[in-house]
Length: 319
Image (cartoon, rainbow, N blue to C red; front, side, top):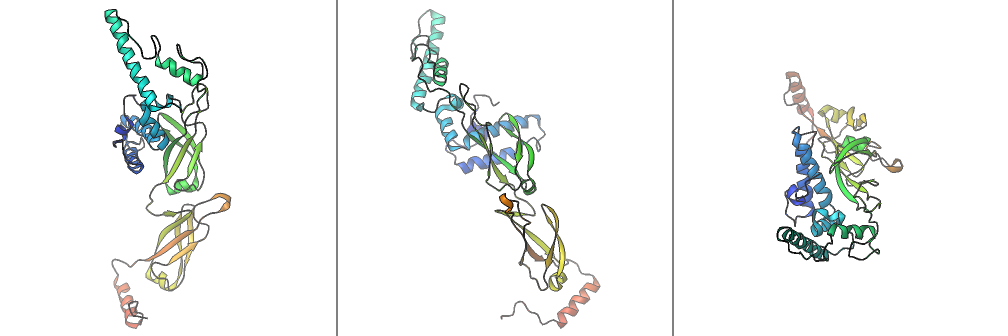
């Protein structure tokens, strides 16, 4: 766990007034640098856990508000406690501790804000359990407090999002095994029941929501459940037509290039996109890109020159 004196904003390297977008960018940058799969420094794993815990708190507006109001111990504060009341109680506790110290050194009796001998931890214990604190009201407290829901991001490749399956993630100081549904989309939330904040006095824990982020891919572009790829073809394949191979997340597929195809034309492969619920699978769109050899052999040059001499085609001519 993160040392209690570390500030979540300091860990992410952002100001307290940072926007959610700034917090997200800072987290993603630090998570990539310190991820144990990337950084083999033994200390990187601890830094990664710190960054993940800080982000899990600051990425949720309500949890962030409570952290700003109550500090590192915000999870221990009942929902109905007013921040100003909490601050006054903390101040009284500090003065009571100082008074007790003076009494130990000089024999004087310290005065605590809640009455002599009352401990703030005991008071909070009573608030959570409803039993009351020494010198406070007996019973009638808040009772068991359910744990807060939390959020964290999980980054997946297009292939991992397509296939789904089990994988391990680190959230704070915990490592969890997660079942990723096949065909998850960017921004989708995966609920892990009971894996959120701990409840007080035996109350159930909150839930953890994983927000899916699909990483940029060198080949695929994802739009909803559709996939977009570039399909490179030769001039003769485009002119004469051909059936060519194309890679998809599910494996190799064949696409028919009609004769007379120009660059920019989109060819649709139905049902080759991302899987979806109720068999609503997306499509794959292959955008044709005609490629010309960088260097021509003598025979190729002769044939191209022959074609240029006999062809009347001019794509720049006004129609």
